Amino acid sequence: MPANVFPQRPTSVRAASLSKTLTSATLRVVLSLGLSLGAPVAAQQPQPPITEDVPPPVQPPLPDSRVYFTTLNVVRYNPLGLESQNRLVYQKRLFDSPSMLLRDTYASAGASLKLSPAFFKLGPTVELQPVAMFNLRAGYEYVQFFGTFGSVQSYPDSFQSYDDDLRSKTNDAAYGTSGHHFFVEPMLQAKVKSVALRTKLAIEYWNVSLRDGGPRETFYDPTLDTLVPGKGWVLANDTDLLWLAGQWTLGARFSAVWPRYDEDTAAVEPLPGRTLPNNAHMRVGPLVAYSFDTKPGGLMSKPTVLLIAGWYLKHENRVNAMPYLLGGFSFTTELLSGR
Image 1 (cartoon, rainbow, N blue to C red):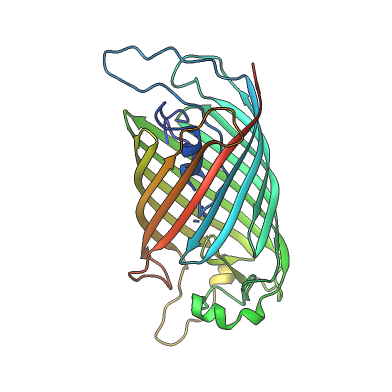
Image 2: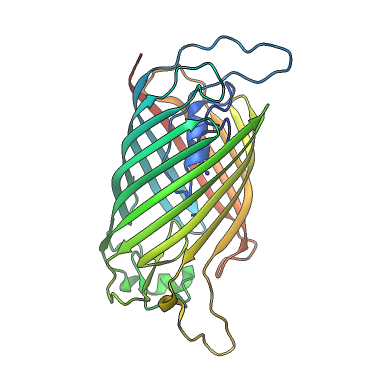
């Protein structure tokens, strides 16, 4: 999770109006890291807190349309990685309604650029939030691997050891190549007072030009941290349980990745005394985000720092006491906003 991924917007949880206490930047950060870090960053609007027997305060009108730039920059350990995820987005409001269910609804289109020392990914994204409890994002990325830092390394099938030590010894076998990455990410989200729950499923299809080009060939992807079929599917999930406390967001994240190998890919004989791996993995751990209070409309709107840790419940190479660690910094810049 693949990177998949980083966090992003709740009111409802992978309701887009969480609360006035949760800043829009925090929502984008907490929902986008996928990922896997997975993950692209969407714009959200503040919403009044829910209190018993007290009418919510009158909210300022939301812009009918807006153009914004958003960025999330992360450093990751176990596996090691560095990545900058950037999007330029045009967003159009769908309904002019005070209802919490319909107030923060929108459609958007944008361009996404992800950069790391080992690759870049570039392509369009579209996003639809017809109600606060459901969000759908889809996109395409052209992927270029540079052949640096051990990427990309490919294997004849899915039954291969790919731990960090082995890959570091075969860095000279890495080569540059390109490919295509398609993804669809439905997300459900919900909030009760200061507690939010969200779950996002990533459905990904990869088509990468690998050196041998065999039907069973795979390659190691550091964001998903598994062997990905050269031509095939990967499923990933991020599920967050959050407590919204003013500028703080505290919670826990469960992440999982499931590569899907076709019958030919899986039809390999295991080594004596071993079984065929499915290369899936799962981890769980705490999530903390803090948004700095800045004036709206500035160059850096609500800059946010993020920390995620995760202990592996299942992994072919990483089931030990060493946790997954991710630190990130994000902000949004409003370029155009109007009725």
